[in-house]
Image 1 (cartoon, rainbow, N blue to C red):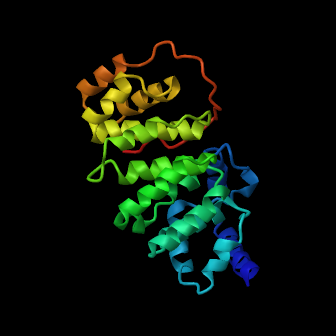
Image 2: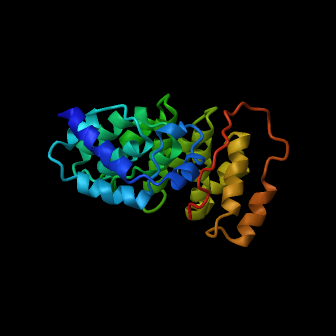
Image 3: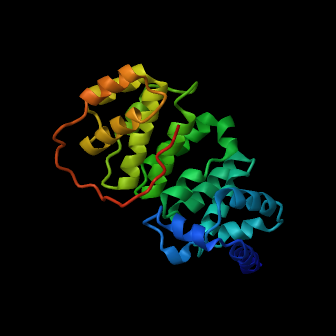
Length: 250
């Protein structure tokens, strides 16, 4: 039964293939083998996942890991988003996270149920951030950014993100996004982390760069942030990628 549903999903995904889009989209994900990218636009995948959620044996697809194609992983992420029971949702997220191998799949998985269980979610976020897995850490930072920079914000969460040290580009980029967003939403609280250079040099400079690209930061704030850039960054080893991560987070 498990293989039957996976094969059905794979067949239907291949029937939606857009080869020119595949060639374009594969360039955005240097960590993903192009041969594992089918080429299907995200809105199409989201719509397809909504129809799949009605399958009685959808749990068999959840259990059939690892998946072969990038789009199968994305469908998996979109299916998890639709789970309405918080504990089951977290269970499926944690089962799936070790198999994520790119920033796009990682960032698109945002379950709606998380909004209703902030305290419980924070426990999971702390666990994810302390992981040794690149995309598990990135996911934890992403959830901290998405759910805990507005009415549920606490200053201690800034320290939680700032305390992460990694050589991985995709972790450090997400920390930079977190602080760029924090500066947009909680400027007075986040600013000391930049003024006191509490991030590593690369992430510090990237956070300033992304802040200065944001329309939510005032011209005066941008001018001041530019003066805080580390001119001669301390030597550090970052596993760089030729990444085309989407830059528009506003």
